Image (cartoon, rainbow, N blue to C red; front, side):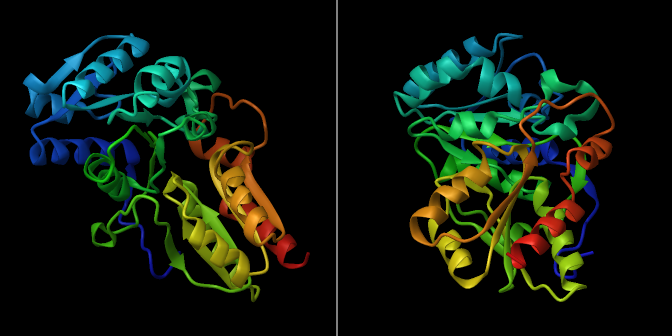
Length: 318
């Protein structure tokens, strides 16, 4: 177990989203929440119960939810809309592009149940392409916090630090909650969780904990790994990536997302322009997921500390 970051207990990142949204509602009376028939599933029930006059349930009508959110934003409110990431990012892509991004409206979209770790819900409900789709949209900020504590900070930051649209990605399964609220959350600024000069592991979401575990595996064989939590995919922290590329021999990215178009692609775009180094990518290998126990699926598709460590070893020997 990483010595500096101890698991306080497993907790779903969706719980952090619900708690953070509740806090944001207390801090700002202009925050509204829009539900799409799965309010409790994405932990927006906390907000709905505390501020029923600021909660709007529109049923299973995700595209309509985005339109209503745009209307609220035009009237000076700060709407937060959340549902499964596959529906929020994919089914509503046209409305997000035209109604929200084109007008650069301050709408926060919560993409819940992201990644293959949704487990038994299967391929139809596993958001594995949402980072790529959302980061290509002009004006969109894309956040992917690593645990429940950071997700709570991220939703408040999305409301306080941004003026345009935000896509915030989080999961359902209980995962290690290992960061501290004292670490803060600055949009666009990655966090170096572990220093090292042999290889840089840049991870996002649930894979950050796996990256820390991978660094321990590597340390046991004499490889000093730097671990970076890239909680903001867009705007990407170019400075931290360039420093990692310059100071270490290789970069390995890790994400619970398709290996194409996501974090790995975003990091490579920066590295190739400023300081090309050998790179390896840990993510879904250009395929759909399936139904099964979350951790078993993570293992099957190579989304583990061991897989990260093996790729890092190969990159160091490049």
